[in-house]
Structures are given as C-alpha cells and as structure tokens.
Image (cartoon, rainbow, N blue to C red; front, side, top):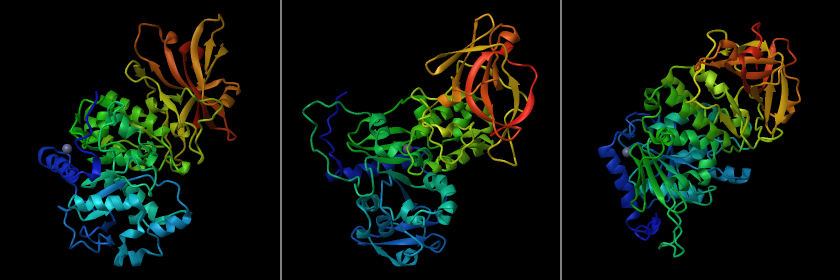
Length: 487
Ligand SMILES: [Zn+2]
C-alpha cells in the first residue's frame, strides 16, 4: 500500500493539533476507552498557559481543592538515554531542588523531549503532566532511591488512569524531542507506507523494558514516531495520514485494549496463557539500563494481572499458569549462555534470566499436571518452589546442535532435552521434575510423553537448580521420588 503523506506533514501543519484533539474527542464521545478512575499521582507538573515560560511542581495532596477529576493529567512515556550525573542533576527533580520547583521553575531548564510534552499538553487544553524524572525525586548518583521505591509500584495506576499517554517513540533520549518538522511531501522513491506495527514497535522507545507496562496499561496513547503520529485506543489505531488500522492479530489486540486485563481474563484460560507467553517472550528481549530492574520493570503489570486472575506471581510466573510458564527454553540464538542476562540472582526457574526465550506450544499441547506438592510457591522464601525429584533411567544422550536426543537401551528415540546453557550440558544429568504429561492419545501411561525440568544439585542438600527442560517417555523416569526445593 502506498500512502500519500502530503496531507498532514507533521507538527508544522496547522491541522495537526486539531487532528489530535479530534481523535481524543471522538474517543471520549464514542468509545469506552477513557479512564473512569479518579486517581492522582503523588505529584504532577502544572504546565500553565501556552505563553508561560514557567512550570510548577505540584503535590496533589496539597492541591486537592484546586484539582478537578474532569481535568485529568497526561503521562509521558520516554527513553532516558545515557545521561551524565551532571545532566540528571540539572534536569531531574531531586531532594535538593524539590522545594524550589514547587514554587516554579523555567521551562527552558528542561530538555527538548520534555518541552515537547509540555507543548502537546498545553495544545490539547490540559493543565497537568506526569513525567517520572520530574515527578519522582531522583537519587543522583543512583544508589538506592527511597522515593522511587514508593512510586514504582504505582506506575500501573499512573499510566492506567491518565487522560492519555504521550509516547515519545522516536526520541532516543531527552535531547531529541519528538515534534521535529518532517518532509512535506511523499518521497519520490516510492518508499512504501509503513504500518504502525512496524513504525511503533520498531521505534527506540518500544525496545525498552519499562515501556511495556506503560503501553499495556495506558488506556489510550499518542505515538510520536519518526514518520507519523498515531493514536492507539481500544477502537484500533489511527494514523496521521488518516488511515485507520484495524484487525491486528489477536495477541496485539489485547495490548491495545483499554479494558486490559479484564477482557483478557474473560477470553478464557488458553487464550490468556497464549497472550501472556507472547508478552513475556517480547519482554525478555527488551533492554534495560540496569539489568537488575528486570523483575521490577514489569511488576505493576504483573500485579494488575494477578489481581484480575486472582492468583499469586513471582519472577514472571503466575501461580495459576505456573506449569506452562515453567516450560520455557532459551531462544535459538543461545550459545554458551550468551543470552543470560541475570545480574541479580534470579531463581534458576525464572525465564527472566534470559534475553531470548521460547515457551512450549500452548494450543497443540494438552497437559495433565501433578495434583499437589508440585511447584508450590514457598511462603518463607520468594525464590523457592517445592518439587518432587525423580531419576532418569536407562538412557543415552546424543547431541545434535542445541538439542540432545534421548535414546533408550534399544537405541529407540524416547525424548529430547534442551540445556539452558552449554555449560549445563556438561553436567551429568540424572535428575528431573515432572511438570506435566500429555493427556491426549491412546498410548499406555508408560509410553506417554512427560514434560520435565532437568535439575542439578546445589550446595545445600535439599536444594536443586534448573539446568534445562525436555520431553521424554514416562517409562524413562523413575516412579520413586523425593521432596526437594527448586531455587
Ligand atoms: Zn477509543
């Protein structure tokens, strides 16, 4: 499809802002997208009238009498980029400048991306803006940040209750901004129209791990990409060139859904699971400035989903889906543990340890799972799952690439194993834990395929760590078991 982009050539065009307003108005009037929740973040930026050169940092509790729920606030989703401590000190709100900023501070103190966000907020007729760097007190250098620890769990509510989210999709950092003028006519070389899927998903912003929950929990988002501006709400995606995109694949649909995750929950167990696996496979690939944030950057989203699914969650595993979510293996490009990203001692059973993961197929695999004592969350230790250890018996292993085929005593093919790292592959494997057994098929129990985690010993007697995953015929696994802990 070739689209004419001459009609609206970006922010320079006098029709640009009216179009953004129109999108939001139509959505307000005709859809169920906008937030009905009355929630104010702890602080917001009061942007003032369009000609004002001053901004104010407001504590919402103090300004209760002035704030009207009908006004709402706009939230900014953006890339932090690489900043020096000096730059951060100048731009961010800190314990030192906090009181002064409440009395007012110049717009010119802010970098281009934040200035652009102020500009759009004003143009949309809104008064309040939330930006993490300005509304959460930053610790510089970043050595444990008490205010961040209070505010981070509220992230889901902050984005989920905003009037709308501005996504500075194309800006790689704060200096770049997102309202730059664009070419006024369509290129003569006939570059094809890029779909929002490409344009938005491939933008620098959407490679950042923190952004996933901001995007999923936002009820509607204006994406400012390099080529176009898009409006994403429950009714689909609208592009600045007046093309409307609908019918994206179902997995992406839930990402747009303003009633996420309620509607996901009502879509059924398998569809929910399929979406969650898709979401985690994506999340694993996203980048973090601090790899130790891997478990935190998705925590609001995990909490929101676990409230709706009425289940517990730990390190990317929901209790109600735990059997299926434990069945992952590092992605195809894994070799010698190069995609191990863990720097914070995540448990060996968490997929968050790897930057590339694949879950076992959801739809085609019908799984019988153990009834009790299997992979229960320990209440004393977050990292521990209770397990029943069994022994693999009468087998030989044959390596082919990243897979290890299992042969029985008669050299018959009985299973396949995938080690998490090549180092793990050198550990003599005898122990495993059954995650589930195929429930379909006519075959006798002993011939049925079991899905297993391979485990290795740890220093403490009862503790084991995951070293791989596999599937193997039941007859090659001992009936005898003993209790242990997976860490
Ligand atoms: Zn809408």
